[in-house]
Image (cartoon, rainbow, N blue to C red; front, side):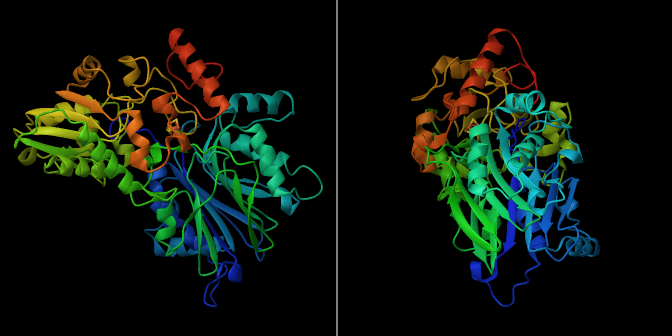
Length: 528
Ligand code: SF4
């Protein structure tokens, strides 16, 4: 996805020294946990580059928990370009347990106080904790209201899901004795509706790594040299040398107390709802989620798209995938049609995100891509992309390919169904009004293709010669999982949680009332 890319909300990484519990080696350094985190976060930085952070626990150190977090990419926050500074930082953070976070926010300020992990200091070690999560609290508004009006809390950042989460986690530890983690997580699920993969440490030396009851966000774990390692994506573990990587089952937690690990279910098993967009766009292409390779899924999406192709293919046609996330689908699309897949658009990989973020759409396209005239000139291009959310910049890209590249025709092919509804689970598309496809059709195409006249109108709107999408019913088989085990709410309008369904009705009411902008909540335009 190139234009106005939607962004996922965060990635988490965990390292905890368990020694023999985790097949420990004599040589492993038990206070090395912090040093493992930056590399793991680098591998999942596709999930956010706004801020990063780490909290570590050491029984030998005061304070027992120490947190370091800053705005910026992982390499900046952990000073990876400066060996001396990085070494000093890692020595300061040395501990037996570490949790790390890389952030992109769907709301909340671009301010370090919103960065994670978020530490809650308390005089009692079991009430002193630090945590981070990937996801979104769909019923934020109700819970924030309840905290303030019924429970007497004050919210320093009323728009922050993280602060809300912190208070509900703290509430579970309100007694004089340490709460049972399984019961505490179960209680949390009775309150919070949304998506969350969570990592928490406390000053008593506990670690909790948990996934929400339907497993919307990915989370996996494995062991290496006496360490338990967990992360949002498998690539972070694979690059640490973990061989057997296991998905944390939805509604299940890894709980470490007194150096001993147990895996516990904290809510009864439910039908899972794994976000299908992880395979389409968000996840690192080298990751495997729920035993399904992201690369293979994207390639199969490309094959399915090619099987729908009605354009008469000629020697003048070439396939140009939008770099980088569309490459696997574009290559497979090309291979199936017997066409070359060529890098006619070269992405500038070294230009920072801040530099790209400008309101001048044409300038944004030029800073991000170079259109290769030698490749595109006079050719009929199949431009393969993984999705269209808002389309506001895609028209500029097509124009650029014609003007600068000299492309004769640009046929846009999308390896995903039309995005027809907002996401309330941590992706920054929150209203119907901001989406491209609902301007042309009022209901999802669950089977078969969009009507030809609808596709024509959409193609005209972005200046393409033609446009086609994958239908909803082709996606699950390409991913390799049953459709009933996926969240596909943004393309099917079928939400996996009660609050998702309620918010969608509100989003529809907002459209009918002519309310645009902001985020969809039960009162329009609140940032949750
Ligand atoms: S609504 Fe879409 S983007 Fe959001 S979790 Fe569900 S499938 Fe993923």
